Image (cartoon, rainbow, N blue to C red; front, side, top):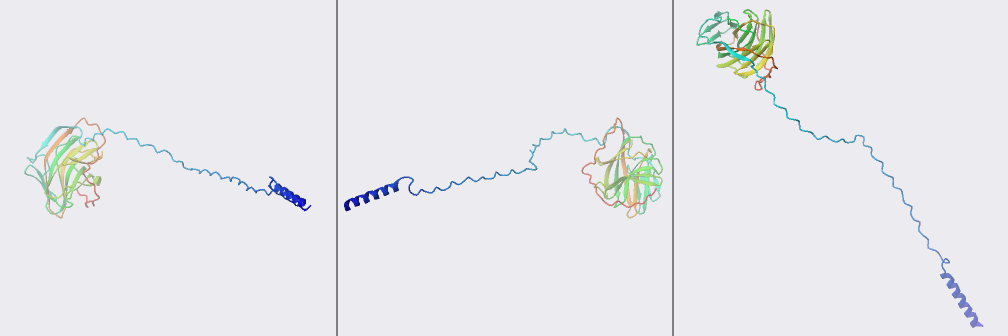
Length: 285
C-alpha cells in the first residue's frame, strides 16, 4: 500500500513538472517598446534680400585714333615786310617824358634812367587786319617788376592792346582805352627773366583772336573784339627802383590767308601757371 502511494506521488510530481514546461504557462518576457521616430523640423529657408548679380566682364575700349594737335599759327602766308632798324625812319624816337627811344646797332632801344615812367614808340605805317609778327627783344638792364613789351592795334593815341613782360618772368595782356585799363589775360609765368636776356616774341592776329609765342613756344590765346587800330609799337615801363634798358630788333611780319577759325589750342604744357602776386602799377599814358 505504501509502495502504491509512493508511485502515485512520483507520477503526480512528473505531471506538475511537465505542466511548468508547456508554452504559455510560465512567465512571458516583457518586450521593450519600440521607440517612435522623432520628427526633425525642416530648416527654414534663408531669404536673400539682395541676390548677387553677375558682374559683367569688362570689355576693352576700342582704341581711338589720335587727334591732330591744332596748329597754333595757322594760315601763315608770305612775308609782308621786314625791318632791321638800320635807319631812323618809320618809328617815333628821341626824348620822351621820363626816357628816350634811340636807334643804334640795328635796334631800337628804350631807356628809362631811374624814375617811374612809361615810354611807347609807335611805328607810323599801318598794319593789315590780320598778320603774324615776330620781333626780338633784348633786356640789357632789367630787374624785378620793370616791364617791356609790344603794343598792337593802336589808334595812334590812347587806345591799344599791350602785351607786357616783367623782368622776373611774368606776362599779361591789357586793353587800354581813354579812362580804362582792362586785363585780357592775367599774369602768367613764362619761366625766363632777368638780364641780360634775349626773347623772340611772336604775335598772331586774326579777327578777334590773338595768340602769343615766346621763343617759338605757344603760350596762350585771347579773344577781344573791341580795338581795331592799325599801328604797332614797343613799350618800356619802370617802377623807378632801377635803370631800365631794352632793345627791339629783327621785325618780320607775315600775312595770314585762307584761315578758317578752329578751336583755340591749349597752352603749351611746359608753361607753368602760378599764383604769383601781380606787380602793382598805376595807369599812365
